[in-house]
Image (cartoon, rainbow, N blue to C red; front, side, top):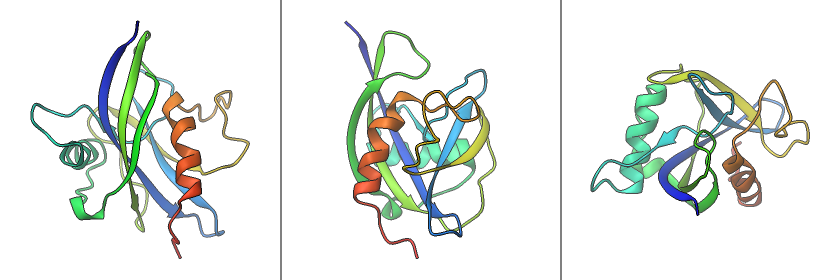
Length: 147
């Protein structure tokens, strides 16, 4: 039986200049898989408040809570903890800035193209956490107009 890990995560969405949508992904130090910025809520912290705090810690970006749109709650195998399931409250936000710098425990930030076949779990240059494959289709299905 797997143990559940509750997290809040934010999918930053932007246009790449070629009318393709990209999603910001982060890789924590000492890990290989890219995932959304976010993390575990503190005691009595709402999912939105946890998302705002974690994004600020990991990217230096202070998002207004009102800029976050709830996408849903998703379950997936945890990326860095064997035998655990991550239960993620995922939010989206439209981003018009550059790539936020990595901060806190983040080693690298990269933009991943949304819905392209070259981004797979076997992509050695940009391997994604299992949660991403649950969430990317939902983002693609309800993507806001970023133009």
